[in-house]
Amino acid sequence: MLRSVFLAAADSSRLGRLVSSASLGKNMARGLVAGDDIDAVLVAARELADDGLSITVDHLAAETATAEDAQATREEYVALLGRLQSAGLTPVAEVSVKLSALGQRLDEKTALEHALAVCAAAAEAGTSVTLDAEDHTTTDSTLEILAELRKEYPSTGAVLQAYLRRTEGDCRELATAGSRVRLCKGAYAEPESVAFTDALDIDKSFVRCLNILMSGEGYPMVATHDPRLIAIAEDRARWFDRSSAEFEFQMLYGTRPEEQARLAAAGHTVRVYVPYGDQWYGYLMRRLAERPANMAFFAHALASKK
Image 1 (tube, rainbow, N blue to C red):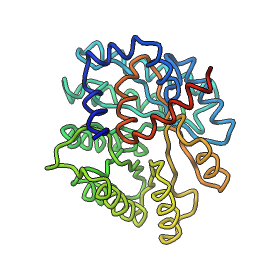
Image 2 (cartoon, one colour):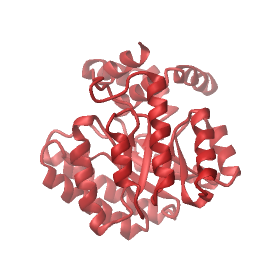
Image 3 (cartoon, rainbow, N blue to C red):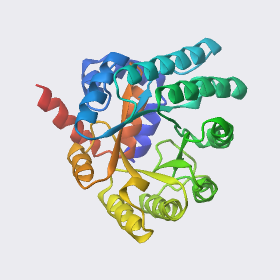
Image 4 (spheres, rainbow, N blue to C red):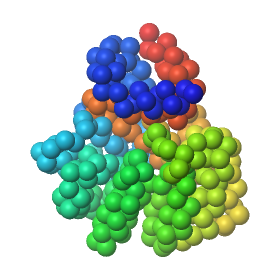
């Protein structure tokens, strides 16, 4: 019930304007979003790197409605990558990009051109790009663009969502040498015809997909905060004889920092997903939909700031 409420809220522009303008909403977002601009995200990234963690940075922009919006997102990422390189962070920091922000829904060819420019900037900076997953209507287009990008930039990563019924097949396609795949549960409102909706079914699908990726030749990036799934991932790594250098865990900025530190201390690569930007409302609602218990986290975070 709560998941559906938060996902519906994520798509409400009216509610978004209301929450975004309220001080309480801004304080809630502060727990999961590094700040509004590149300067703020560099501070957060440096703190994480100093703690032995890796980073992937995502820019939260307004919905891309025009070609100018897409161009602005491209320029933001190119600038971000240059700043990450200048700060000496690119050995441990990469970027995550939503193709919709680069104009995917307007013109796929233009989105590909923008993505190529971002990948070129990442390569120049000595790092990589991962294409974020969005709702199921974009999956085919995203994977097609990924295939094009990987011809020139083979380290470009993909995100697959375990709640989609198609994802096991996509995992088999992408579990190849050199392929980087972030596996997450999924955080969009999807019809039952294309997605599992029961929590247990989603977990089972996650494990099936994890088995495919761990047994393949690619580089799995296990994106979860669920203690059971973390333990299963560690077990599967041993089962398939993967060293700690052959996969990684990924978690959200501000979520379960003690577990992030524990896994890093155990020798695992832990990459923290660090968003920044003033368009944080939809991101916040989707994080609450993934795990309504995050409300308790926000309450604690707010109390700690007083």
